Length: 394
Image (cartoon, rainbow, N blue to C red; front, side):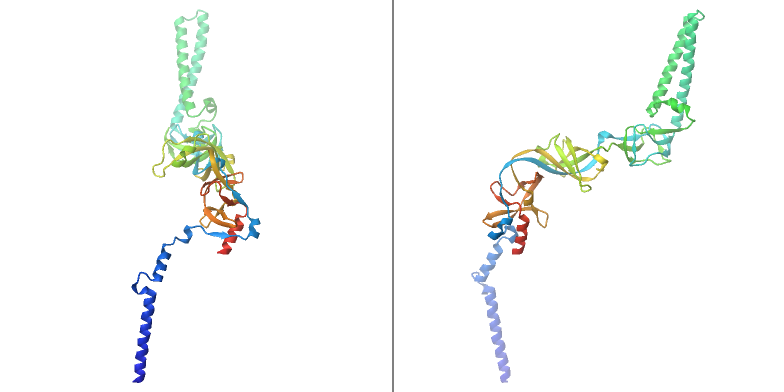
């Protein structure tokens, strides 16, 4: 019985201690408890990442750090645009057949370079056969009427025929000449400049489709056996790839700085090369969805490296900034999210990291669009040393 009373008494004492400890932790419902005040103050403090942290470098290590005082100066304004490659429409043409019929042979393939007038395919066309027969008849008729007219002239000079017969022979010759001219023109529309060459060749119902310009065959749209419609079916696309267009997107805020004739440097991930061009046209309307408009850049394409629909970046030199800020290229670092930042001097041996927005780089200096002002001091050479030292302190 005694042991039971001791057990119950010990349990009561333990419960009283637990309740007292719970009251102390919870502040017993009092709003003025020190712990409640501390919790409130902690929740009101800004996040650690919202304010830049300063760190100090010992004086004996400052020789590794170059501090540069920023000054406003005239800078070339550069804009970074994104875009895609397109064919130069002024040097690109569809190849459309002028006669109907099935394709008998395809003579070129995409990627092949053709010269103007080169045969690209052959069409077995009854329309061509009819036109060629008309030409042969007109040619022979003119040859006969021309000889008859020459004979009539000789007879008339010897008073062997009347003037009426001479005039009739001349009229027949003129009509035959007109028919021959019409048939020759019809053949030239098909791309046949000299029908006489075909007249000397073996008879064939196949007519070649000739390249209207020189360039690269970038698209083939027909196959052997396919029936072509005269004047409607596009067989190929030819483009002179020595120059291409880059259609770049210009944001509304940059419109005032972009104009026709601005120099552009185009780069793509496919090559380390840079391609140069000029803005030839700026669209008259914005895309209502993206709030951008297109700038057409004519770019030289040595080696025909730039291909249609290839993504690229265009750097535009767009005038001058009168009071611009630039930092040495070595001052700009990137964080884990690839955002640029620099180290700014806050006092003797004391530095802090600051995120900035940058523009183009030229002559070893990077333009700063936002984040820095004239008179501030930033770290140039030695910024990597500071980044390492900062990482050790954390």
